[in-house]
Length: 187
Image (cartoon, rainbow, N blue to C red; front, side):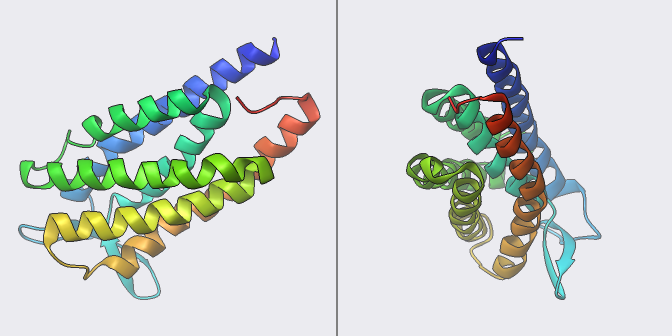
């Protein structure tokens, strides 16, 4: 298999995963949790006595996957994925949450992109971790404020998304090391 074919296949897998995270996260917010607040989100425990809307886990993963889409397919594919993702973020959610979800998604993913793009020259892991931190904070603040007019679940949102970013680090290290071994260059 050629290097370019490998990049396209992997990029397609990352893109599909990214796209799947978005409606699934929105579905979870309204339907999956240890407790569902009336007229509010379904919550899960994320540690340290904190709870968060259940979709946070997949939002954290989506931030990392978007970085991998950019690494394999390039900047313009990542921009397109963000735009399509903003539209997808309005699906599988209550109409009252659609604007909050799409707005928070669009702004946080572009914040992630703006941090990842220059940092990727310093390494995949550093760039993905730093950009995901920025993206998850922006997403958490915007979504909670726009959706619920409150930042009550901010700490839980940040911790929940951070859990997924940290969980992705071994995979990012593996991809980085494999890329070096195979001579794959980022897109």
